Length: 202
Image (tube, rainbow, N blue to C red; front, side):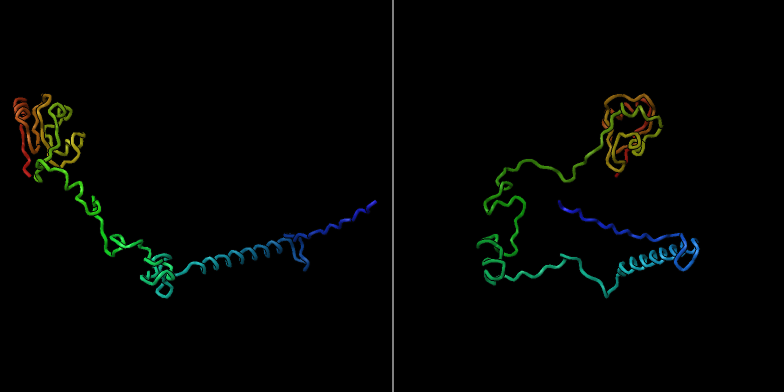
């Protein structure tokens, strides 16, 4: 029969906070000592944190990692770490310095934009108007309709752009309308209703 080994358990003594100390101090004195220790620890922690914060000055300025690259030496052979051709592949157009490929480049052959036939004409001075119909102006109750009022009512997007009034629909109120252009029918309808047309000159 095997003998059972006796296991000796070591008791860990915990510090008694708030009780009578070995020197004979009171419980309140023990609490004060604990508070002083914790205060010292907090102060030392704050000092360490302040020491970690570096003050930026000319003496400790450093460039960030990766902002500077080492110069790549060319033509130093395969032992340079860049290979025989200095990481530029073989000979030809792509291995030359200052190569540039514009949009639509097709390797030297006539590109598609030059092969396509060109017809027609687009003027650089073409005027683009914001269209407003007469029927949409009935919702505005003001006597004078300006571009600002048209934008406020959601009929146009930009009050500084060109505006043209077309004769779709009819208007019943006698109003003064300010716009950059009017169609013949629109101007006739406005005058027939007792209103006026004011052309804004740009």
